[in-house]
Length: 254
Image (cartoon, rainbow, N blue to C red; front, side, top):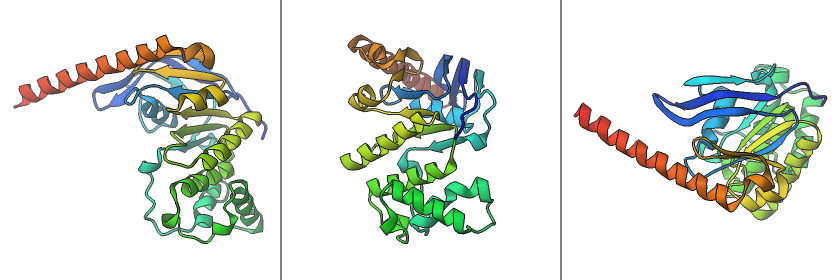
């Protein structure tokens, strides 16, 4: 895939839910082809930022520029608990959904499309499970299915929200290889993660969030004990302030 300009630009960006900000005043850029980890304590705003990039949340203030990218150029994998696995669909058909932008919702797969699906399943080691319902898969197997679907989307920008949560060590290693392959191909990959050793080993750049930017740059310089401690302190302070505000709002509305 030949990459085009795909830098993300944040201009004093604030995102949130209703009237309540979740991440504040983010300013910076993600370069084309960058492999970036987004880390921070629980509640730091990692998922919120990804949802803002993909367009699920509109800015409360500030601006986000995709610099020419459209929704067709973005592949987004939310946290696995947000995905309904009860829908009766096979592994093959679930992966084939990655081609919908190419073939449309109503057209069936031709021979080339079927070969692409089989190839994606082979890349994640699941060819033998092609006919199995997704609801019968283990957590690791299902995450492999989702990565196979991402392979078929052929996206310039890939957003991953905790892609290694509750999966086995072998699956983590295989999925990291796929992420590194995307990076070599010049795609831009952002992944919200919680395992700092994985970040240090595989992600050259890191954004440390605590409702606001604590540090952003080369991973070694970002993931220092001082920065990590600061991120926890800021997040705890924001949470305490939010609890006071909610209590006051409830008191006034009573």
